[in-house]
Image 1 (spheres, rainbow, N blue to C red):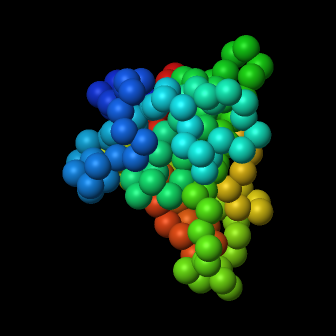
Image 2 (cartoon, helix red, strand yellow; image 1 turned 30 degrees about the vertical axis):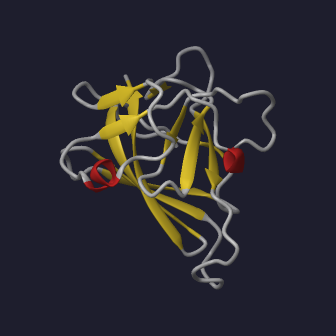
Image 3 (spheres, one colour; image 1 turned 60 degrees about the vertical axis):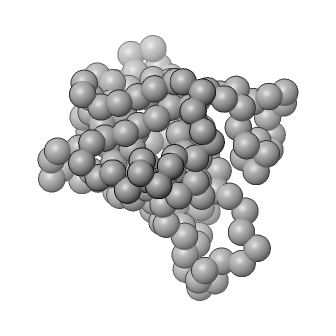
Length: 157
C-alpha cells in the first residue's frame, strides 16, 4: 500500500524530536506528515548499521515507526521501484490483548475527504509495499496485536 502527499500537507525533514508532542498527536484538523531524518531510536534500528539515518515517520503515540525506503512516497512510480515501508513497533513486555490478531491493519483516509482504503501487513509490523489510489495526505489508523496508533503520510503524484 502506498501513501501520497498532497500540496498543503506538512512534510518536514528537520531534526525534530523522536516522537511527536501531545499537541501534535492530538491535532486532527491538519495533515502533519513529519518525515524525520535523525537516527532511528534503538528500539527500531535492528538490522541497520551505523546511525541508521533513513527517512521515517513516527506514530502519534510513538509506538510505531514507518521507515520509508521510497522517499518521497508516490502514487505512481515510473522507475519500477516500490513504495516500500518497514513498520517497526516498539517492543512491549505484554500485549494489551494477547488474543488480538498480529496482522497490522491500516485504515487510511485521504485528508479532507471520505476516501478510505484498508491495507494489511500479514504477521504484524514488518516490511510492506503500501500503495494508495490517489496522491495526497493520508491519515493512517494503525492496529496490531491489541495496540493502536495513528500517523499521516503524504504521497506525491
